[in-house]
Each structure stands twice: as structure tokens, then as C-alpha cells.
Image 1 (cartoon, rainbow, N blue to C red):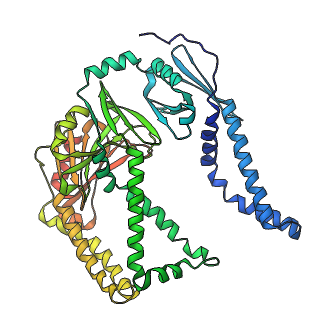
Image 2: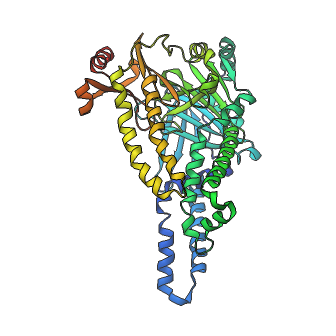
Image 3: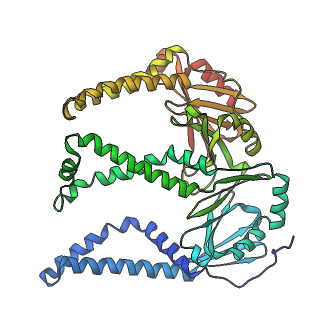
Length: 479
């Protein structure tokens, strides 16, 4: 290996296209000040009265804000410099306050690359470096050449030769998602909920446009008397289509490989990402089978990761779609030490069924009367089905709840329409806590909560409504 540990380059700047990166960062960091824009427009118009009109003032203020963002972005780009020296990456940044950072090779946890849309015409990449320790940080070098990114990776990580040798040793630990599996995953993706939430926020603002167009009246005219059924179905269909396209773009060409003690995840169509996850950062493994995939024996595997990640919850997708029959071999190959139990040791007793049902059914009953009153025609009577569906959901939660403690691991099974299983090593647990409601105490039941490090806040999992004796026994085993 050719070492770069003694290279002492002159300080370098990022490619000029990274101005987009710094401008976006400026907007994200100053978004809380955006509501001041209409305030300034109002004050200026109030100050000058009829001498100026609202439209002119608005254009000038908004233009000034965009120019200001551009100037700040340019200053941040101009003062951002980096170099490799003595086996460390040195970064200097800051406009009003200078910040100098040294990243040593031995502190580097992972080096990830992303190729965004605005990178491609210039053949540059974004390099993200994550470090370990109490002062964890994520350093980004946006818009550097692929050659430069490889040079930094070689100095702080593994050289191409070392990576090639490691891959040859672990060549059997490599898997990629076929396009047909990607489509299956996209059709059942949870991103549908995200798109529906965005649509819901837009629809909630329809009343604000009544001065220009009464959108609700227009919808009623277009869809007729059954608009409250056909319009939601149309929105659902449109959201579903967008979610499918979005998922295909994000997870296109998904591949996973294990190189010694690191996992490398690659994906993306427009934004190509490569993420490295050291095995020792994995705090828990979640196996998720949602209601659409379970009938076909399909699951997705997620990881709970300690430290800072692009996802604030510290959870990432390890593999999107896998046959349940292949799960054991997959876990042994890519996350050794995380294995699902052959047999679940415990589950809530029959008297706990009421805990899973009574409160949800009670809350659903509150919605029945308003539904009967406000939903047009006789369709409101369908809300009487809601408590029955909630009862079915509670029964499923009760039946699927289980746990097992073995070989220093705690496995928990839970869920209603979806089935989730999580594997948590004892040494990864930050804390565990026993809680009881008055009804649980009366029936001698309890809930055990377990937390592991993940993103900004710990990830918490629970064994709910278990016999109190069993909960105490598990707590003693966990120490």
C-alpha cells in the first residue's frame, strides 16, 4: 500500500458547484427567520404608504433575501478549505467565526459517497466522513472530484488494493435487489404514508384559495354526489403512484456487501449513495413484515445505528425485500450474532387480551357518533365497523406479542396488521424500565421498556402487558 500519511498539500477549496450545497445549508439553518419576510414587507409598505405598492415591495424584499443567501453561501464556500496532513484531514471553515477541525484516521468510523443530480455534469461527488467517540461529528466535502475522494478515502480508510483483497475474502457476502423485487417493494412501501401526509397538508390549505377559486365546490361538481368517496380514492391512487416512483428512484440498483467488519450499502438512481456501516455500531436489528408483504412471506430488514446518521432516528434499511425462508442465512452472513429465536419463550397470558383492546375500542367509540352525524347520506353508519376493526387489531397485537432471552440477546415480537421482530444484544442496551398502570397492577401485569442508542434520541422497544413475574425475571437477566 502507498501511504499518504505524510502528504502536506496546500489548502484546497471545493468545486464552485458546491455553492448550491452552502446555499441550501444557509436556508436550512435560517428557515426560522423566513416568517420575518412578510413582516418586513408590511413595515416597508406601512412606512412609505401609497408611494410604493405591495407587489413591488414584495419582489424587492424577496430578491434581497435570495441575494443575501447567495452572498452568504459564497462566503461559506470561499472560507471552506481542507487538506491532508500527517495522516489527518484538516478542515477550516466559518465566515464570522473560524472553526478548525482535524480528523485522524483512527477516529474515522465510515466514509460515504453521494452523487447528487447537480454533481453529475461536473463529475464530482459528496464525501461524508463520520467519526467515533463522545465528540462524534459528520464532516462533508461537497463537490470534490472522484479522484480526490478516492485519495482521501485511501489516506483515512482502506486503499483500493485493501478493499479488493477484503472483498475477495468476503465475496460470498454480497447481495443485490433485482428490479422485479424493487417494484414489489415500491408497491408496498411505507413512503405512501409520507406522500399522503404531504397531500393532506396541501388539501388542508384549500380554504385559503377561496378568494381565487372555491376548490371544494369545483371538486364536488367534477366528482358528483359521491365526491367524498371518489376524490379520496383518486388522491390515494395518485399518492401511491408517486410513492412507487419515489421509492424506485431512491432504492434503484440497491446492493449490500460485507467487507470484513463493515457493511457497504449502495443505492440510488438520480442521487447515488454509498453508505458504510461498521458492525460494532449496530445496536439492534429489526425484521419488518407489513400487511401487504406478510401473505407472500416477504420482510424488510432495518438497522438501529448508534451515532449520527442522515436519519435522526438512527435507523437505516439494511435490505428492502427478502424471502422469510432466506432470513436466517442472511442474518448469519451480514450481521453475525443477531439471530431470531427458533422458539419464542414467552407471551402475554389470556387475561392480558383486554389491555390490548379496551382503550383503543373506547377511543374509537368516540368517533362513531360524529361520523354518523356528519358523513352524508347513510354512509355514516359504516363508522359502526370501526370498533370491530379496532378489536380485530387488538386481537392481532395480543396474538403476535412474544419475547425470548437467549445467548445474551433479547428478541421481541410485536405488531398488529404488520409483524415486527427486533433483536437487541444485552451489551447494547442503554437502560431498561418496568412500568405499571393501575389496571396492570390489579391484574399483576407490567410493561418492560428497553432503550438502545440511536440518532438524537434512544430507540425504545417494549414488552407490553406481560405477567409481572416474567417481566421481573427478564429484568434480572438483563442486569
